[in-house]
Length: 324
Image 1: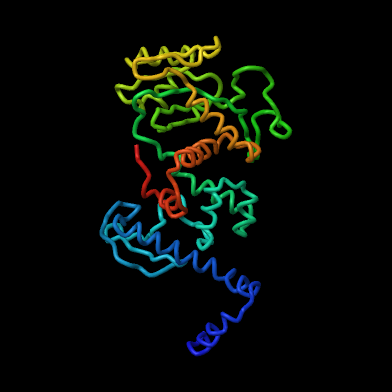
Image 2 (image 1 turned 30 degrees about the vertical axis):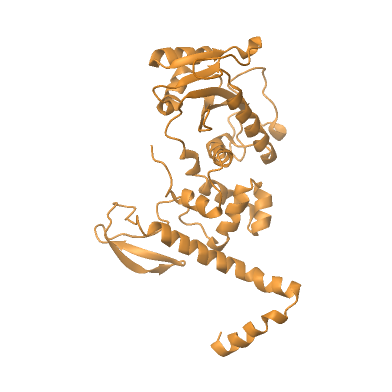
């Protein structure tokens, strides 16, 4: 649009009524969102930009593609942009990303998020797991003081799979046998009194010493006091690694008792289980293969670590991702 024509058009904006202003703003939102996203990506990558192929920090600009600045590595001569090598590489409709991230922070189901952002539900589902890919690995360095650990179990699900290794269940169904069995996904949650939380899908059926060594041991401070229920796997695990351990016999009605460092109970971790179950309910069943993404999503929300869509975008790119 020529400058004179734009000036006349812009001067007429105050005369628009409410519905007309909304009609003008609606097509401008994606453009404004795209500008904001591109500016944020360029800002956060500017201090740590390197070739994702060979990690060389010497590069030069190499034109634009799909609104993103491209670069050529001076060492390997391959080209890249600021999203190459991240879970967001190749995703389109970037002007709607921040609106979608707000929907993600609000824990909206796929269809509700898709309708709100005006994208297809398949796009909303794909975006969900691309943006959550690195959230699941953003864990605290260690659990300190008193750390409570316990498992929760949910029915294994092959939702979305083209081929099942078992007979199909209608509307999620139920386990064919009572109690803890191989039909249930075991989710281990450990949480200290500072609200630092780690979690993992450790397998199916009861938790074992080997699973605790893999998923819990790397996060325990050497002076931690581990508090669990009376499950023998924790006792064997703690004894093998010299970890201070106290067990609460919940099945016998024991809830709280005094201890050397504070009250001995597993109420904090059990309360987290309850919040997690209630939060998962509106999704009407979560596929087992995506459970780690949902655990990271819930951990992020429960810890109130992400207060804006910008922060979530940074985490999705990997800039505040804690490598272990």
